[in-house]
Length: 176
View (cartoon, helix red, strand yellow):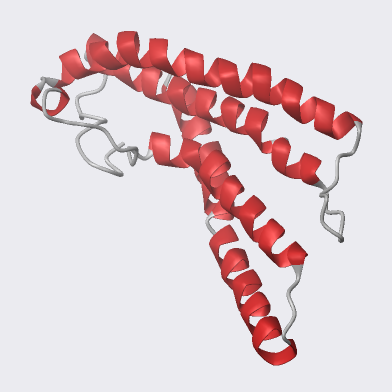
């Protein structure tokens, strides 16, 4: 079980480490846009669109990294006071129930949405005609990555419930 957890966590961490550099891409695109406006009094539509697509990638693809690194926002008034085994049980039952719905929507409906866009090689309505299908393909990809992240968390919670793991995976960010 630990081998599966390690493979999932390393894979998601590697993807997250790539996606984090998209912020630099967004900054570069904004600088290009600002300089173009200041120097030439004109605007590029492609810089805004690509910056938006990179932002979507950060949120959608980077979400799995935030999930396994315990950086999702949660209200800890009741949950934080629970003992680790009860938290693990709550995550396994309620968390999984909620998560299955999110994953289903991203993979099933996001996948149909993305495939329709890919099949017609959908492009932007802007003058540069950028490939919109690439951004839409992020929906099912994020669903799969989030599902893998949730599988890792669920396996860790099972380890807590069986006594195989003694650390609390939900105690603090990075505390996996």
